[in-house]
Length: 339
Image 1 (tube, rainbow, N blue to C red):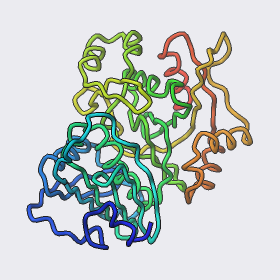
Image 2 (image 1 turned 30 degrees about the vertical axis):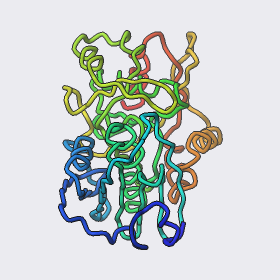
Image 3 (image 1 turned 180 degrees about the vertical axis):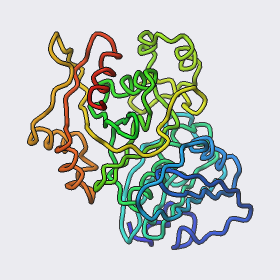
Image 4 (image 1 turned 45 degrees about the vertical axis):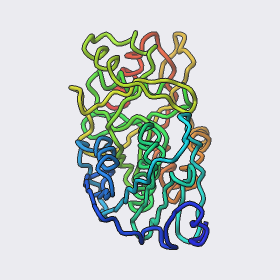
C-alpha cells in the first residue's frame, strides 16, 4: 500500500505520522528487549497500553536495542456503530509501510525503518478492549520488535528453569496453554503463552508474560485451591474462534515469570494423542523435525533468520510430547529435557 493509498483510512496527510497531538499522554516500558514509548491524545487509550505491558520483566538481548515509538490516536465515537464483533484485520504493505486495517477508523500503520507506528482507534472500540489490545496495539509492538531486533516470531509457548527454556508448539487446541499453566503451577519460569520471539544465532527467547488464557474445563485439573480461584475469578475473553477463556493476569499472582530471556535447549510438539503406556516424549529425526517446524510456523518460516533458527534448534532437539493421564505428567517430561 503506497502512501497515497492511505487517504481512505487515515483522515490525515500523506504522512500518517504528521498530525500533531495537542495533549500528549505517555507511557514507556521495556518490552521484548527494547524500550517502547507510547504517546497518545487520550489518557484512556494510553492506560490500555499500560494495563497490557506495565510490570513486565525488563528483558535484555545481546543486541543494540533502539527505542520504538507508538502513537495512539483516539477518534470520536462513530454514529450508529453496531455492538457486534469488529471486522478482522486485513494486512497490506508497500512503500516501506505495513498496514493492518479493521475499518476506516481502526487501523495500524507501521514504519519499521523509522521504528514508529500509528495506532488509530475509534472511541466505540474502547468497549471491546480485547480487540484493541491484541489486534492493534500488540500487532504494532510485535512487528516493530521483530523487524528492529532481528527476531524470529513464533506462535507457541515457552517455559524453563535456570535460564534454559523449552519451546512448546502445536496446533490450536492441542494443549499448549494447559501445559504452560501446569508448568507455572509446578514452579517453572513462565516466558510466554502464545507468542515467542527468538534470536536465531543464540536461540535466546523472549516474550510477554502478562496474561495466561485458560478454558473453564482446565480448572478441574488444578489441585491448588488458590490458583483455581485466582483463574476462575479472572475476566473472560471471547476469541474470534468462539472460544471463551479466562484471562488471568500473571502480574497479580504468586508465580514465577522469566526475569531474563531463556536459551532454548529443546522444542516439543504437544500432541492430543494419549501416550497409551509408551514414553510421553520422543525425539524427532532431523528431517521430520525441520518439516514439522515449517508446517507449524508458516509465517515465521518466511522471515529472515528462519534457516539459522531451524538448523540450531533441530540440532538441540525437537520432540513430540504425547498426553499422559494428568497434565503434571507432561510437566515431568519437560523437566527431563531441562535437566
